[in-house]
Image 1 (spheres, helix red, strand yellow):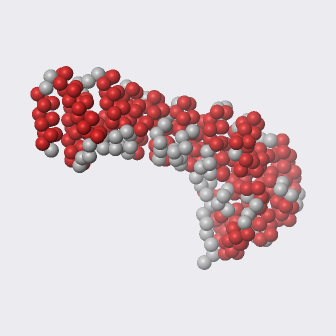
Image 2: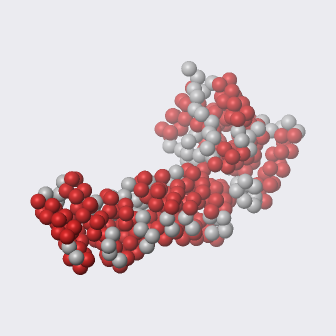
Length: 366
């Protein structure tokens, strides 16, 4: 501590030239040494007093030196991060591990697009930060964070990027390469993509080829221009429904024949659900919703199993997973499932469906 006290006295009495030399000396000593939290705080106080008197170029140099330092004083790092000059703020926003999520969120909410772009390039980003980046950031920021493999997104953040990808094939491609997008949201992304973009994503990610194919054939007005096959399916199934011929046998027939659009429309009509909700139930990795809908309609296990295979990746389900689903289905109660469906229908509203926030709860008979 005596060294720091002597440095503090020298700083308070020094000339402008000697104070700047003291700044670089104190910074170098801090970076190369090992100190307690109290000593680091003291370094921060001294460096903070010296930093006030230097020009932008010198502050930028200071930021570069401290950006990768594990023991950089937090108060100095935050001050540099909020500097109006991106030359100063950029290095610490991109690299410093001393900035916590709260500071990054505050910075992203108040500073320039260049500051947001620097944050988007960090090694890792938590959901609270990416939520702000994708809502406030410009096109360059959103594309940058979409390519950051260390970034984590909430469903809200992914949905917002999908909405912003309208007409932006580059953003769609960036998002299409991400493997952390939930299946039902990936569906919405593919629905917005041009045919060329879909083919490109399918080539780069062969494991999603079946989903791309299903979604391409199941586009509807909620996500963009619907395909001719969808309208044909809707016309056919609606006629069956009007004539009283839409029943479990027809749903089973559609599922067995891999007629995804007809099965989706049929399920939506029998449950009085929007098509997008029925479609999401069919392809969602979480199969609870589909099981509840099937039980509410009093479907047999054979019909329910056919629907499960229809919505599964490559139409495949392991025997172990299928046994678990069968036990879960047997544990559901018809009356309880029907009451869940009625409750959902009575409470649904457009905003909740748009955001994908409302889901059917998983309830089993006691």
